[in-house]
Length: 122
Image (cartoon, rainbow, N blue to C red; front, side, top):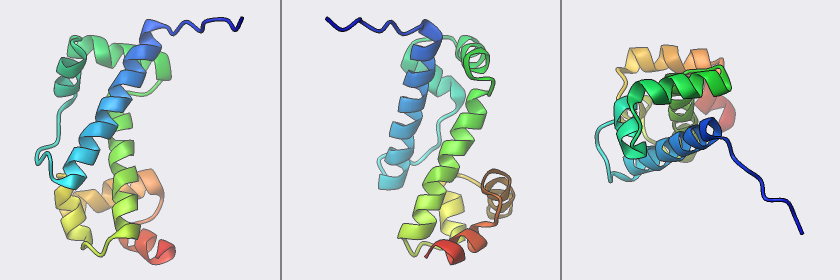
């Protein structure tokens, strides 16, 4: 008989947070949602106080929920850059960034600008 794996509460909170982020970003891309959630909204979805969510994820992973959220936003942006012909400006707005700030954040996470990324990957 295989042993039953027990998940720790911090692991569950982190997993559930990341699941909700992925789900929300998919809703943004498909137009089911038009406003980006704040960390507080994800905490509400998990029925946990925002400070507890932030502290738990930071303690469990070493990174803040905001870091994971931005990282996942950049993953979606990379996908849109390579699979659509949407302008970089439109992708920035979809991800609720000012276009100039989007390029800076994208470069910080990915290492190249959105234009360089699109050119290299299409």
